[in-house]
Image (cartoon, rainbow, N blue to C red; front, side, top):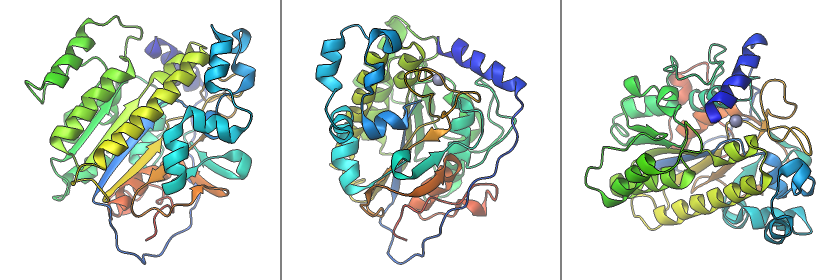
Length: 374
Ligand SMILES: [Zn+2]
């Protein structure tokens, strides 16, 4: 179960009291071109390693000993190719056929590009807090469902007349209502097995609510991603929010169970669902040509062949993550070869996509990542 596992990790980390960290500086771009982005979509993929994003399937894990793989031949047929480039494109075609051609992919450490978690804990709540608020709060040191004392960039955007009432967040993991502080934040946050009640009579939402109620629960705090995705997608189509968040969680769950085959399957499925979402919004006049997509993860994981299942303060490499950006204001630089970004820069980047200066209201937040042409 996700919570118990995650709580175990956090319990261990509590002992290793976290020190506040400093975000690394980033270069500033000058505003030259007119901003086209009017809407932003933030997608997150829990605990997917940069190694798979940039190199595809890892041969040292495609076996019984290290990856609990059930049908090795079938897995190799599906995911193994001779080069990292072919493997990653097979695993994540949306990333490598669309984002790499039209947007930017940061975090390939083998090329000298890094994106780093700075909270030193390298597990979910601190990672989502850092991503969404733009700074590290040492008091956020567990995955417990404690309402976040920190306001996310989403909460601030929702106070601006331009976006008020047009912000929404969906997550597979049932801690998101606490992370966004649903009691305070002023916009809908739906997560876990909680039925979605804001579109009464909608047949898709009704069906997903029935699945949440009736399907066997493999993980206590998280349904399968397909249910969360379809709920979020239907909301997006009907309500057309200007600021939208969705996080999927299976990649982290299967990794914790040590099942490399299912981890790869989930990575591939998530990539396909994100591609589906992107092509859907490109057919909607409200979004087409004026939406920036930001895709990130909450933490990395250990290496291969040992450690990949886990993450946390004591797991080497779990601070290494990745970041993808795609949209009308993002130069199509593809795979970035040298850059140093931090997770804490993502919040201000979300605001900057919309032409907003997050540091005005949150001076603790790290500066935006230089991913826009303005
Ligand atoms: Zn985890």
